[in-house]
Length: 271
Length: 310
Image 1 (cartoon, each protein chain N blue to C red):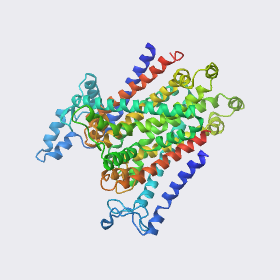
Image 2 (image 1 turned 30 degrees about the vertical axis):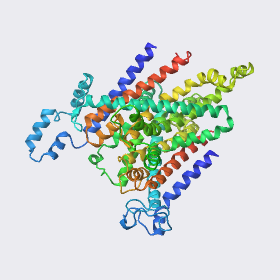
Image 3 (image 1 turned 180 degrees about the vertical axis):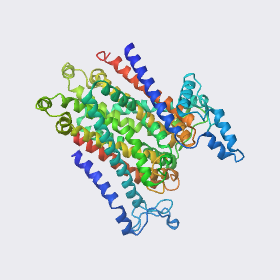
């Protein structure tokens, strides 16, 4: 039930993101081109959710935002899950000093207030390592990179706990006794059996990444305008609370849908 | 107890040292040191002047040497100077920290009272549980800056009851009016987490045999909840509070920026936006320290409540 509802919400958003260029073609509008003669237009057949302060179609910009948010969420979850699973497995398998060092590192990252650290990290000038700022693609890459710095921790802790319990099982001892190498034990016996907890952690990482991306974009440190992101649409909406308060409603609902969708999926997988 | 405290003190010190090193190196790798900013502001400065100024301020030294000197000064209590505010960092941070602690304290109090009540209601009336669950999921998924904007639209723009941002000149009632919307914004997300976990814990505790025994003795439902169930459910809830300290501080940064409230979060944000690296670093370290101390306090609280943990 929860799983289905969550997948439905995420599926809707994914469909909206994927069909964004198509919808722009149908409506004959460009989500990035200002149209100053059509500012703050009410909802109509031409602009289903109206237009913003520069006369751009709100629905099309929301759909563009879905592309950005889902791309950041999925890419961060992928990077964080790969890194976290590798670190968690390594810690559980090697044990001893390696385990202690990796887990203290995880504890340290977990103890920090993530957002203030992310704000300082996000301000780092990536121009120096050859990534121009302000280009949507490099903005997305930068956000994914800094979110992965924190994202792996949750996955690694769950992966380590699950791997520890699997490594103590009799079938692992049996496999070793039959002469299976360590790589085979980890790949064939441990990894498939810890896939469940890792999937839950990955779903929660997507939720956290979408929320963090929208927060950073809202603060002006994430995806820079004119590219559309739900976060920077809300930053724009804050400037318009007196003139066009309704602009604030939709981007927030979209973020709510995406994050609740991921949380529901994680809850559903847990049961 | 002494062992625990010593261990945590070492852990906090190591975390802060690593964090400061990582951030210092990262910011040091960025283009645009303070001398570049001065050059941009004064066209009469020549390349020789720049070199002389760099040597004077030690900016020609290797990054690691600069870090060690900076860290040693911090440990001596010299927090340096803020370029953005043209004041010593120590003077800026005091009032900001106080303002943030007031905001955090009020938000924790509000979210604890409302969240725990909601959780208790869900545990006592199982038919209401899905509703409380839905509220908790929505509350945790809604971005707090969006809730804040909606609150501004309703209470400041439409109704005109409360200010949309800023802070009061005077104390008393006026200050309270400026505090209401930020506290509501910050409490909302936290409230959901408290409600969710206290509902789960209370439901578990209420199934325990001693609760059935107490009920059989004729203990009233209210007394049952407050005297018998709540203290047992408090320990895991405090653990959640400890884990949430970091996200609460992050929420304070959002709330302060959104409502233009002077505080540590807005200070870090302004420092980052204004290229004031020294202020940003010192403020970030202080916020990290406060977060870790809050987590430690919640852990100690758990031990005080549950003798088995001590």
